[in-house]
Each structure stands twice: as structure tokens, then as C-alpha cells.
Length: 386
Image (cartoon, rainbow, N blue to C red):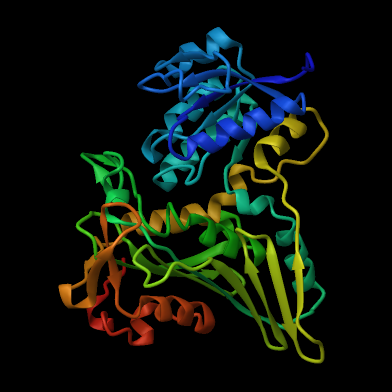
């Protein structure tokens, strides 16, 4: 292993954090990084660590950074812990890969970003879809006028989650815990990539690019947060960007972003890095793009070999959406007549909102909110926006 490989501490190594463990192993094989420590409230046991050596483990994040001499920290912990952990790393000169959403409120986001800037450390926000080579390719097509005048951008995400998903952790499905904001929800967490990617392909990723945000939040499950939602962002250029999302789909679908022009459209299945261009006077063109891993990009950036792909300022527009969701009235409770219970993949059941798949797709197609689509389970009078 190269002596230049950077020591990495991972905070949050279970659940989604497991993917970071495997990615660190990949970077170890490349001589770019090594796993120096794991921060968990309950240490990983021998079976969980199989293949990952014997890294130092501690529930004290700051002490672990100090003892390991970490250069990079990955923060993959509950949303409401992100800012304090990020600032603890920055205060020690440790660079960051900070999982999305970067913070539960815009104020916490600004506190994190300012702390990182003041410390002179680097923060990469973990929107992996923004590492897709399709994003700059789509922006180039738009700039070239390939689909004519840009009319708007829609995104759709129809996912399936059973009731166990909302009880997997004390913060799951919560808008707040006591006085602490959490802001878990379909738009802000599981399908946050749809929001961030739609804003990025339209060149409206920064806070100052947002003129207004209109969220509509609903829930079929017995939770605080939304499981079925939509939002329309109006950019300072007057462009509508809508995202419709549900965790109560009839059938699970691959989330996508669709860019509407007056002479064609571009559809981007962002988890697959797959792009379909349909335009006047041309046959359909489909391209599968590559992707740059964000931890690898961070490490190479620190070596002076690459520009950073997702700095905090390029998630400011997304955080405007998070803030609008945070300030919105609590999600509208869908009546029992609007959903049904079916078996989930595990022993837990799941709830399915009738007609939601069509409504999600229609929102991306028409750039309309659920209240404007006449969905059978919602009328405009039921929706209140901040």
C-alpha cells in the first residue's frame, strides 16, 4: 500500500454506511486511502468487520480523529448530527465527505459551511448522482440548444418502502425530535438525489439560483414526515423545476429527471447514468455515461489532481428545498380510502397510495403539483403551503 494513502475515519458504518466501508476497501486497493477508524455507538463485531481488518473503534468521534491522525472523515450518521460532526472534523483540520442531506435546516447548513470555510478544510456533499458524467453532458446539450428553448425540468421517484423502514431508527420518519429538527422525508432524504439532480442539470444548484419553493407534503404511514410529496422550485431565471416523490408506489420504478425543451426532451435515469435524447429531426439517442466516485474525487482533489465535484455551495438550492419542507405545515394525512396495505418484501406490510405512480409521472411530464393534477386522493383545498 502506498505510504501516501490517506487515513479515513467512518462515522456510521451500519446500514448505508456499509457501502462506504466497501468503497474505502476499493480505494485501499488503489493505494489512495485506508480505513483508520470507525465511529459507532456500538462497535462493529468481528463478523461485521470481516475483511476490513482491525480499525480503531470509538463512540467519541473527536477522540477517534485525534488518535488515528485521520485526514478524511466520512459522516454517514442521522441527519440532525451532521453539522456538529462536520464542525468537529473541520476544527481538527480533517476533510469531509458529508452524506446527504448535509443538514436539517438552512441555518445549520450555513453554520456547517461557514465552519468548514473558516477552518480551511474541504467538504464534499455525498450526492453521488452529481458525480455522473451525464450531468455536464446534459448541461452541454442544453447550452448547445439541442432541445431548443428550455421550458422546465421535472423529476419523478416512485419507490416502495415497508413499515419497517420507518421504524429502523429513532429519527426515521420524524420532522423533529423535541426541539431538534430532523426533516426526514421523501424529498429530503431517500429521494433527495432527484431534487439535487434536477436542480443541477438546469444549472440552478446554488442558493442564489432559487426564487421560490412550493412544497406539498402528504403521508399514508403513521409517521411525522412525508412519504408522498412534490415540490416546485422557481429559479431566478424563471424556470420551473418540479420533483414528485413517493415511498408508497404501486410498483417500484427507476427515478429519473426529464428536461423539457420546445424542440425535444432529455430523460436522465440518474442511478443508472443513462440518458435518452429525443428531439425534432433526429432519432432517439441513448447514451450510458460513466461516474466519478465522490470519495475518490475528494482524495484526488486533496492531492491537487481534480476539481471538487460537490462542494457545499453547490447544494444550496437543495437546502432551500429542505428549508421549505421544514417550514411547511405538517404533511396532510391521507384518508384510509386513499391507500391500501399489501405485503412488503420482508415480514412487514407496506402501504400503497392508489394512483400515485401515475401522479408522480404526470408531475414530471407537466411540471404540475399534485394539487393541480386532480389526484383522486387530494384536492387543492386540502393543501396548505407556507
